[in-house]
Length: 444
Image (cartoon, rainbow, N blue to C red; front, side, top):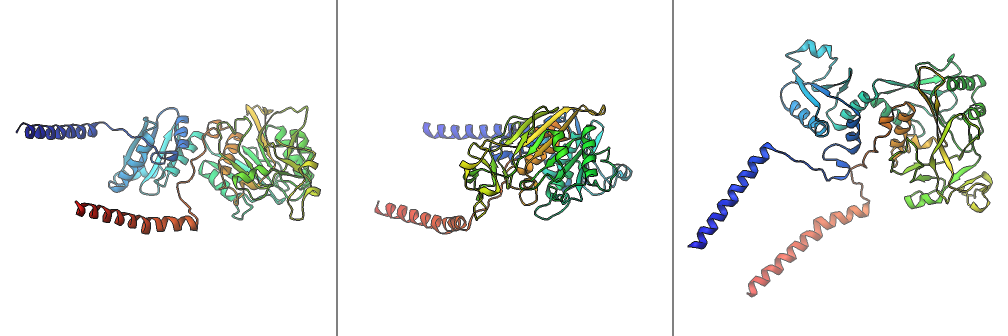
């Protein structure tokens, strides 16, 4: 009898504890994200972005009562966990049509983010679009980037494999607008351009065009120059001399990329980066299909920092070193051996009183930012960091790289193992275990 009362008392105590825990859970909450890249909350990159927005941020959602508001609350709550001063307000477009019109809202559920007098709109209720709006707020205003055209440069809006349309579209999401610039037609580089991009010209630039680029740099303009191996100077020798960066003949060969899956030794895989603001904390591999070695000239007026470098096993191969298959194969005959630099960041006090600093980046490859290779490894992240640094948005340039994608892409063999494992092997194992347990019980 005494044992029965103890059992009932123990059961009652368990019920009381469960009720108390349930009551406490309604008042207090705790969340911890153990997923890779914090995918269950918001990414590490977006948490760092929130840290750049000092002071309160207001999110006004123009949504009718219903499921759309509930979805908005869930999205904003993921960001509020890391920024408590992110306030959410709702406005019913049917009740306040004039306020909705004044805010420039065009769709039900649209969010207007406000921070330090700047506004940005969120039209899609997802983490990516919300984060892009926050990045535009952190930038403080739109940026204008002029892409040089007319000499066979990569198309800034094109969708072909060699074009830069993917990069430009991603920059547009974060408040950077692209402008085509034909130097043969324009009287000068637009004065409102925050950056000029010279992306892999294929034809020689006219002397007048080169002079306009020189004048732009001399007056304090920022420049991104993507060079290519195996081409002549294309009339750009004066600009090269002005920057103190020279492109060496030949192509960079780095067999170490094979360990990362590169099939051609001319595909350079960068795994470590010299210390520089662009690569500060950057720990993601990047792929460069064909690379020209660069060298800095002495007695330059710039602060020169190499931020892209090949491995110690690399060398600079000339056309004479290449085999019939086109793959250089004579490292012992190479005049230059690794590690070799192929990306330089230049900075100095700006000659223009309107700017504090002037920045230039020269990289010996443009393919890594093309549509064909932009999604490989950390190419997009490095490209975005480079542009942000050139624009002077150091806070955005220092953001950690985005986490790898969460989607699985198994091979046919791996898919077969998963299919037969879950649909055939596992059920058979459970059946055999059941039969074994049943026979064991019968013998008893």
